[in-house]
Image (cartoon, rainbow, N blue to C red):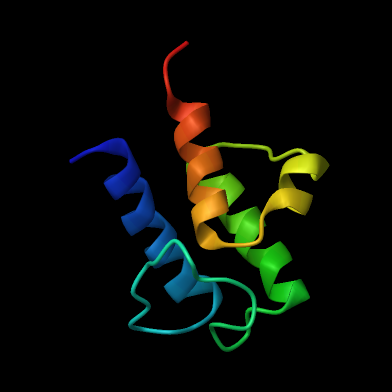
Length: 83
């Protein structure tokens, strides 16, 4: 499985857990308000769970730039690419 696909499956699982939904289908365009509970507090909970799952520590600039799940996924993929 490729890195982006694997990461998107892991993001969907995190969303299901954080937002207490059983059947969230990942889509790059998902954003605040698209899922019950995904508000500003939910965004913080979601990003903390993502950081823990992927072993990352997002900068405040990155967090401010995230407007969709695709933005988060892109940051994860970029960080996991070998240098």
